[in-house]
Length: 523
Image 1 (cartoon, one colour):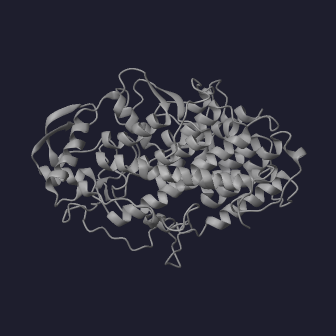
Image 2 (cartoon, one colour):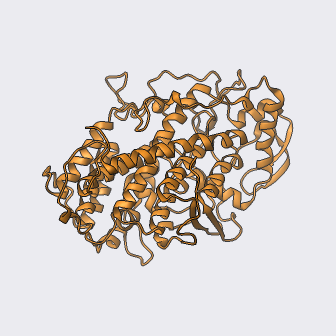
Image 3 (cartoon, helix red, strand yellow):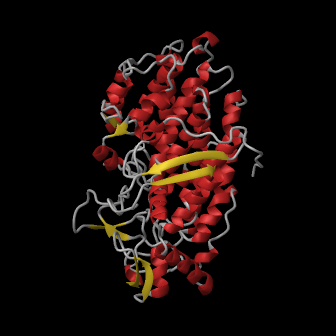
């Protein structure tokens, strides 16, 4: 782990409130833009539509991430029909490939940088005198990633390009023009990753009726949703048709059984290592049911967290559960606060994105290997139908007569085994990448949370306006990891172990970014 000295910029604060729009129930536009750039005309603070708000974007002096993408937010029904904010592998893959396309599109305008998936030469330094060519190239590159990854979002990204005066139908491949460079960079990212192991096209093992991102590894749980035969192993949850937090769409009376989401993630190509098995992670002995005392202790820690939920903890649960908020916004807030130029934004976000993506590959390797039980199953195994003290549901508060087999976590349980924690691992990974980039641990992020903005307890929680503050990346990672315990979806020891596990990917990603920026990579 890197040792950090005193920050050279202590006391800084994020300047652009546009990066922090809305509470938990609102859209975090910068992060949502990075996910899919799927914007319908959302109004800004002046009442203008998103398209109108970027119409005056200055290609020469502006920053396409901060000034354009952050103004667009998704059409809610379309966005949620494709991916939920908790669906970390799908969400982060989209964000990651977007950011790779930005890096590769800007590389020709940098004195030494070399792209990941394309080698498009070096442009004269005079073409980098302003941000114009970089902004144009990056936006065109991302357009091609959007088309390849999720065609349903193409019309919305076309709107974005048109709003800033660009032509989405310009398919030039002229390596001397920013449009051509962007088109080539984006196409190269899309071509290199469409068969990277994630089954994006849905045709692995089948000729007809494609199923994008479906499992082709043959994973089968040892437990069913109806019977826990092996109390240490993952049990798919039987739940309502509505997977998102809070009230929303879902067929009434329809209940579904979880399937391990994208278990093939562990087989995809990483940037910084050849195989995830090289990273050691001790077995989850705390959920070994043959160690009865340790198993019960792990269960009791979850119950205690459930019984002592506060408004602050509830909202931190929701904040970090949405991967577009906690994980998605942190880097952008830091980049803006530090006053980075456009290259700095792209390079830092690229390093953080690589750290998250590669960490997820290793996390999924161990999720499949250990196939660990989730708290809801373990609680029922230990206590059966005996009463426990815990959160009694939205608006109910803590009760002392809750049958253990009716216990429910504050957060929705994700569709994959428990160990390690993906959220804790990727928060730790991106934090370490940022520490290495800035050479300090300072974050100093204040996030306002409006009263009543909870998704789980809308209108009631929090009872007053709150303000979260993370002085350091270490504070940020602590809350991210601990929120998984508070939310009832991870055991305490899982969250604790996931932090150092994730951190190593931040180091690897920073060094990977540095090699690509310095041009120290092979052909």
